[in-house]
Length: 317
Image (cartoon, rainbow, N blue to C red):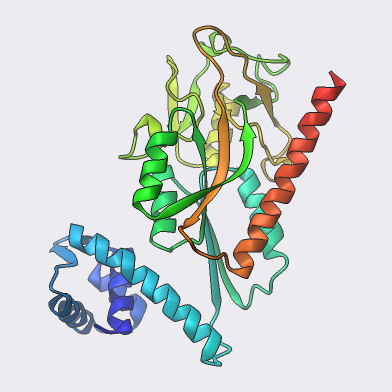
């Protein structure tokens, strides 16, 4: 088994096709197929199932690729540090649930580095994909939340993937709506007041379990639900359909604009509020890179201004 073969296998898994991977790697399809077969023979497992539509990863292959990405990531770091090759670009990636503050912190962090020396990436993804990205070292950091409802299931999944959760901020539920929504002038909003409006939720794909929902209070009964897979679509649905979503209330107006507002959710006997703990995940016992540490600093800096602002509003009431 060679580093080159490991890199080939990772590329094929990401492309989902031998032909596409061969084009990306600038080698012939037969040469790549032969390299993958030699790798599978040397490690004694089948990594890919070949089909007419491409390739899929086997169960044994998933486990192999998990370790392969770790090995290749460490190899790249070693090569970058000791080869003296100035052309090697450093990499840093973040995977996150759909949080504008995570994007804001990323923007501020990137401004402090020379983008000609780094390959930066930030992906807004489904909950399970955030976890998979950090577990597979495609991202150094993942941003997600825990609640009383999902904590046990998510913590178990993190533990299974050798991941750690680090606390950032505690929140209560807010109703996020367009500024001209019929309920926009309310000081707080109950679930009964929202019954006639569609509840907007981020689609979780095959992982549609309540445990993976990005919206707090996901177990409540919502007579009208519309799924979306990105923030831009969600915001458009808020305007066009008077839709709403339940969130942390931490909204970056610089990125989302000031046409949307977060109104405190008011609980009742049947629909209580819930504690939302937002944090970041990393590989267990890992040490953050310089870029990763700076990103977390920017997150904490932004969230501290949110906390201060909320305290100021509370004191003014």
